[in-house]
Amino acid sequence: MSEYYIGVDLGGTKIYTALADEKGKIISGNKMATEADKGEEVIINNILASIESVIEDSGVAKKNVEKIGIGSPGPLSVRKGIIYETANMSWEKVTIVEIMEEKTALSVKLENDANAAALGEKWFGAGKDIDDLIYITVSTGIGGGIVINKRAYHGFDGAAGEVGHMIVEPDGPQCGCGNYGCLESLASGTAIAREGKKLVKSEQVETMIREMSSNDPEQVDALLIAEAAQKGDKIAQDLYSKAGWYLGIGLANLINLFNPEMIVLGGGIMKDKELLDDSLEKSLEDRALPSSLKQVNICKVKLGDEAGVKGAIAVAMEEKLLS
Ligand SMILES: [Zn+2]
Image (cartoon, rainbow, N blue to C red; front, side, top):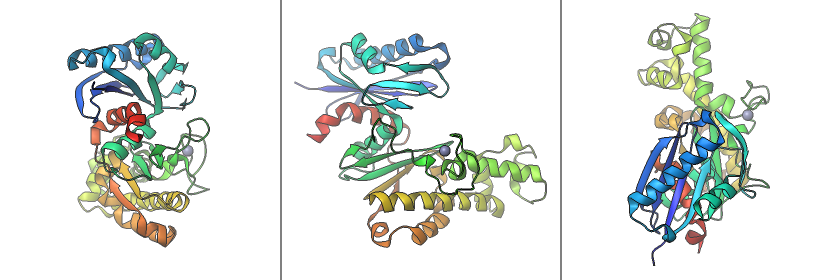
């Protein structure tokens, strides 16, 4: 008898749910609005509706669904199956595993979204056949997941792998977490944009960023700065170089600590990875232990927009994949 698995990629704006066969191939999928501002009951009902919809569209009998994997932003407890809170979502301390198991009569497993994406890349993406990898996503923030011996490393309560809050500059700018000089405060899209905005405000520096944003700091984002850099603007290139340099420090720390075989880089900023490459490589060479640096393959994600849902499917399938 065939077994099927459901992955739920729970986000602040949308829920992406898919049903896959035992090889991880997606058979049916569904995207719907999270309606995050409407509170716990509405969000739970939307998740349930998306699950029912993928089962119905697939034609698979519900009894053949083995497990549901949920990838969610944290902080959360994998052990207890509780989501403590989620930025931009009006709920807190939700016993999601218990609730979903009761309502669906299926087995449910919870995972932090970055760990889920790391597992997705490990099993279905860039990291097939790789046992030890680190996944890093660089977009408005910086997140990550550490896979050790084929399993996501959770730490005591599921909060491990917060690579964005690794301190890379003790006197650096303040991070969203309250600390100073976290990698996220120096190499994320938000950090790159913050420096670009400052330049436009200062009115001293000649840069295309100024014209492209019509001299309005509010129009400046990482994407606009990337465009200016690609057109040859030295100042914009420097902003990306600086972010790449800090990213190199972060990666060197991870390489020295974990000796991974692969580091998979994803997120919006990595679409313009070539703007970071020179300074990133230089920074890595200066800091990573040479023997470990030689062994690591640093590459881009393979799963793209499906990383979240494929990751959630990997969470559901984990025991089978490991067997
Ligand atoms: Zn931080």
